[in-house]
Length: 264
Image (cartoon, rainbow, N blue to C red; front, side, top):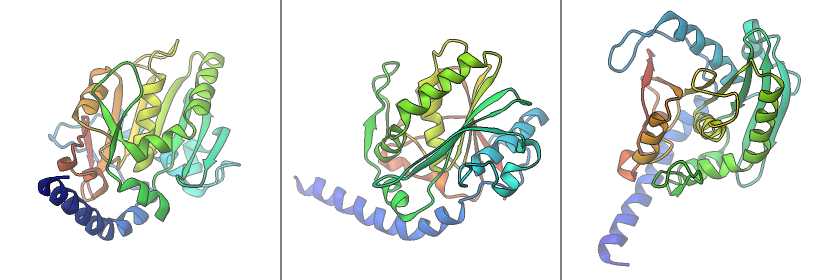
């Protein structure tokens, strides 16, 4: 290793240590994405009322992923317009990576929902701050890379949950599919949607993604690919939330657009 490479590696490690001390409290404190949503975009384009309604509905499902929703009783997130949700499967993986989520159906909305939980413990935080990238094993794009820890977490349940959703689509051909999640869960929701593209019966009008406080998930090639699919990825962020600014762009990470801002 050259002196330059050694210095670069050393600086990055120091940065990660300092960053971890700064954002750990923020990550834990942002465990529930339930908050008021206002019409504002980064470029000041007004957001239609219909979109605001959807943001407020699906954020409750993103929040529900933080609960033990085996009986769909988790307070505010499981009440009101989400109260009649039918839980199909609650899944959890513990160990080196911690992955919680569920698949459910809302018959009134005619929606199959997959919700992924964000970072909720120290082990998950440690995985999040390791900024190494890996290729996303999807033949649709070659140069795109994503966060190693995010993809490893998703892979723990990838085959099982993707198959389950595809089976539900066959059983409910007139239902849409919603992928949602907060923080890390937002990145997992994006992976889920990408795996579902091409599923018979699904198209850009009925396969939708709503993420809240999603970090940068991959490099610019990955961001460009997400945008190029033609599918709708609604990325909602709080103006004062640090998580969407991580991992840093200096580590070759970038966001896909558009970005919808929430006033603090």
